[in-house]
Length: 269
Image (cartoon, rainbow, N blue to C red; front, side, top):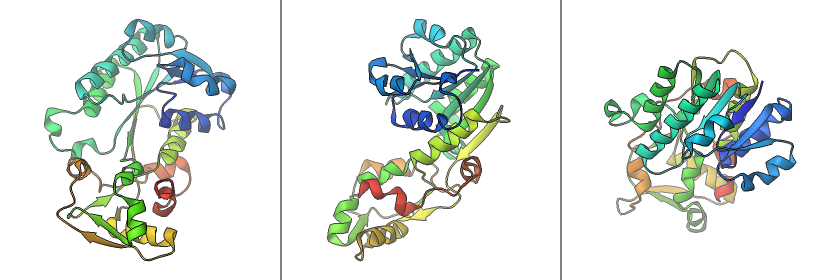
């Protein structure tokens, strides 16, 4: 049985493969890449590389030949219409190639998103997968902890003050490393067919908690203050998604606790 990871040269894809190498023989892992030349390091690790471009449907069916389970990592394109079209091409090619099980990395708690009635790229992609008749697993990823990088953490440490836009913000965000570990566990395990996992933190944190984490890391006091003059697109985005619902799925799949807030933000300070 061969397992293929699309978008294998992206941050999440590489991490998933790193974890898979600890759980299954390398000859069972196939990396799908839009630019195979960027997958040289994976090739050196003994991973088979196949050209798989979401925008080139004629190449996808060949890329999926003899693949039993396929991980579709959602497109990073900024236009959701284009993203959905790309996902449809992958799903259609998977059916034609005889893939038996498709896994999709969507977004956690999509039913809570604003304007969900009109559909969004993740719920619509899931519907296409359901209609395809393939066995499925929906891996709904919570907000990446990376979003804190736009909050000015280094400046907060220098000034001793984390300043954010006003609002009752709470977050169920997680690290890519944790998501990759849980995804690899699903790919290498059994009993995950036709399941939906909400890969979010089991508890939320606030900007006050973030300031406390910065305090511990910096060894100096960092306080949190709200200021209406603070404007950034991230705040309007955060209000449109579910950042407060929690789940134990991630920890159960990993077999350990999620990475702490303090450890998660180290790369951004």
